[in-house]
Length: 135
Length: 135
DNA sequence: CGCTATAGTTATCTTAATTAACTGTTAACA
DNA sequence: TGTTAACAGTTAATTAAGATAACTATAGCG
Image (cartoon, rainbow over the protein chains, first blue to last red):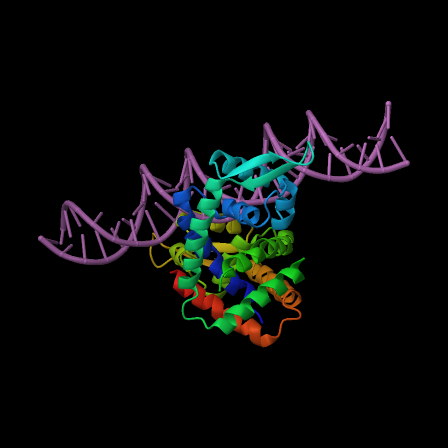
């Protein structure tokens, strides 16, 4: 299956640009959105938890979190430790999350138009397998 | 099909890291490799042609080309114009291309291990459709 | 108590891309 | 034919995203 990487990667830039454009009115980018997504699903997460989940280094997470805090989308609660932070979306953060979620889902609908459900679901399986093999 | 973007994007970073690591011994990165790939298939291409093909701006191509020229992997021949450059891989560039091509194909084999040919080919079709819909 | 591991931050650097402004060349056309 | 438009390519400056190294502070364990 030669050319699968090339084929895969040709989609990346247009997709990330479409997502960033969609998120721009909320002063978000996809990298910030990732943190909101994780916190929506795992409130009280720590910084290191997010770092591990997305496979990015801690300083990257620190900056994303600082930015989201500035925007009023998340708060750092005192964790069960004095060194661990317990992060969670604010009420405003949850509202913004819900709005973006809706728009991203709508975009997914438009971008997958004309693709049958079966190949689409198989792609998700393929992605999971690729990821497993890459680790 | 909610979550397809997330699923797709989770593969990007590990994949690009694996590719860049593979290309590092040749002083290449995936962004440089793209130019070599295009020139292997379309010798005498111009800078703008590459810019359009990959959907990146001209200054980005200029810098990639300058770097590849420094490495001795490509040459700027005089085009049929005095303003257009006609780019092509050097003999050394072709040799490096062939070596990398082999290794990338081998990596593709490892990374797609355990995925049946059918879902894999369907994924390529899905990528093409996604790309079409994104434009 | 004292050592080691861990959570998080700061500073600095790299890579890749963008935009804006520029030079020089071509080609269209009045 | 001379002027003007459009086009190929470059340079400079900026932005975004990430990495590494070095640091502070706390936790946990002998």
